[in-house]
Image 1 (cartoon, rainbow, N blue to C red):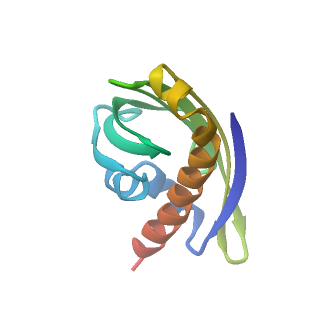
Image 2 (image 1 turned 90 degrees about the vertical axis):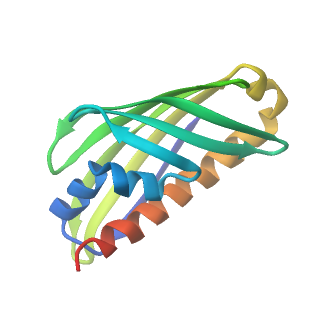
Length: 148
């Protein structure tokens, strides 16, 4: 499954870049994120609970930042496992200066496997779209709040 969109964040690109690399900002922005811990400059561990239709699952996994091009963008990838199955995915994130601040453009790809994929099949894409939109809306608000 693939999703793409963009959001305008009313802060300079460098501030958005810093927020994209801040585990606390990511924790606040990721829907259902219970914890996220930075283990190196490019890796983090996270625990996230997601509800897809009638199925609720808590995923534990790793987040990796790659293709770093500060302050223009990167690829953020994640892989999580739960009792109900697994999820993998990532997003290519690009930042561009615009008169209003910074345009964040993202292209997401994700896959869900195991019981959760079979039990919640019809909910996966709508839930992924909703969670993706929630993340980038929340991220924009948190990042904008950091510039005071």
